[in-house]
Length: 443
Image (cartoon, rainbow, N blue to C red):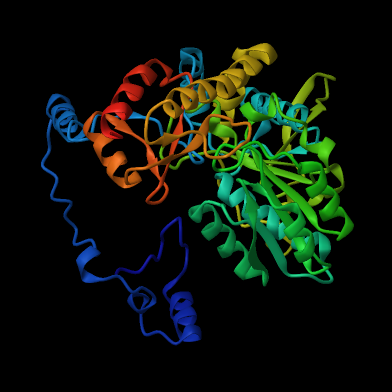
């Protein structure tokens, strides 16, 4: 590894480098890195130069090896039709080439869209402050936990989450909690809703955050959010709700049931199924304004008294004042937030409600049809559902999942007896074929 003397990115003299190496007890810069030989760059990429046509052909062959399945998958990742308008406008160069909008005089258009995104979330949640984008739902939940810890400040270390919380989401939360000295604990659910009676026996003054989801990971509508909010408030705990913008258009506003922070994936609008990539939704009460992680866009006026937009209150971020940062988030999902705002604006209020209504009616109709098949009980939970539901099978759920893959469909197998199926407007046209396939494989 060569010295970086004279580099514009590491402008250190040889003497300065030697002084720093001496301070950390290293003989040279190579000792600062532990890179296995198997992945160490040897100066050659071993990529033969090819033309555009050859590369497109190779990519086509590679992608052609993917299974061609109609997905009825959900559990946190949802597919809704994204209008072509979103692609065409979001692909403009001033949006694609913009990173973080530090220079407001150059990025007024982008900043205005992010301001509108925040305004939409404020209207949907009833809370006064919305972040203009975070990584994903899991990191938003982690940030909510550390915010709760900062607000409580003096005591408490318990974070309570439902026992049905997705493993990946819980893992990210535990990473955040570990650094803050918090303990993540599960509370029981009853028929895929919070068991409020059992939970009330567990909540005490050591609880800093109580988390619930609506809809839940099994697609059920949480029916006792108000009681959960009262329980959290009685113990001075922060009440955090996981949800998404489509569901918020028809469910009770979180602020009306005592929610302090709303998290979730806002990319249910604006992005097709992206297999992990999302947009962290984060909205909270105004009293926590200076504790909000990530970025906020504010509206003001310039010297000519024209309405302008700018990033504001950035002292919360590590790139401004590290010693007082409330979050380690530096990059963000601004381009995805821009797409979400465009999608929501193109739908309008009535269009968003129509989409949410489909998410209620489609799974209800599909569950009724599957329930009529011998060996299938659907839905398992005696609740209202949104997008998805769980069904019980007499035959092995894993065997049914594999058999349906052979028929061209993808569903979740939760255990030996239960499958989970998600239906939205994008796969509704394949419902008849799915039902016919289930009739065949469930026999």
